[in-house]
Length: 340
Image (cartoon, rainbow, N blue to C red; front, side, top):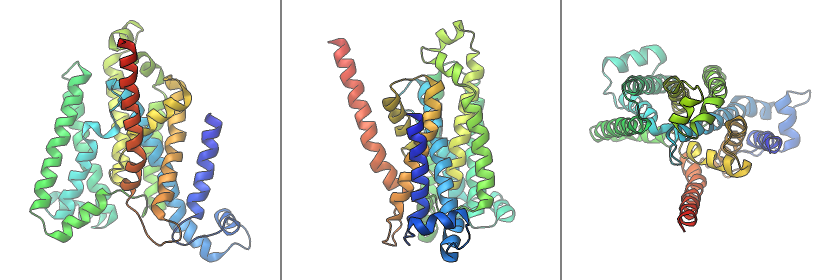
């Protein structure tokens, strides 16, 4: 199964590079991708400047959100937990809203001085907002014992920041509000190789940290008390899981916007395909399946040959919502069969 998922990622990557508003046949796309002698110069520019960075971004974002989703669902023992449940995405959105609407004051001025008012400025603002919420949630989590309490704290922090965003947009002019709403729809486009150097480094480090913690997560499947009897340092494992999942979700939000449903749906899809919750297998499968599904969504947003660019979250929601509904119905049927 892992081999098939790897092949799906490879095929999806090639298709994401070949397909777009301008269709480039595979016999032209592959030589341009390899920069072979005699490759079409126009195709080479399109592929290396636009499509290849977009495809790499899709792979990184899909893998990061899928792994973060597995971590959150295991930690909270909740099938509806997802990477943004702790409010990290809301924090990133608040940072962008402050920068875009001009309400950031000195912070907005500092952001403009560091990265400029364009895409780089939005990345810095989103990263700052996500980091602020992450530090707040981690600080509060050290004062409580129950993961349910941490979950409630994260939901409340996310709700509070979402309310602040609504107030900011209500008192902003239409053009600034439209700029924020466009960012909030999510997109893999626009990333440069300089962006990817940072994005890939952050995601790679966090993914390695997540993959190195699969044994404690396996113990947590049966509850914190069982994990303690197996010698797991529960508080340390909880903190590291929250940290890595939040870093993954925050990095994706900073560079791609708040991408919906991938972190919620892909872990369930991986469990259904593999038939196991063993994180030693589930984590690598989530990386590959997340990348494959993300590439499929990336291709769907391009509407090949039409020149249209669909919102990323519209595509991920169409894909993810049926998966979540199926999981809920399956869980309810399982409980009914058990009680019956």
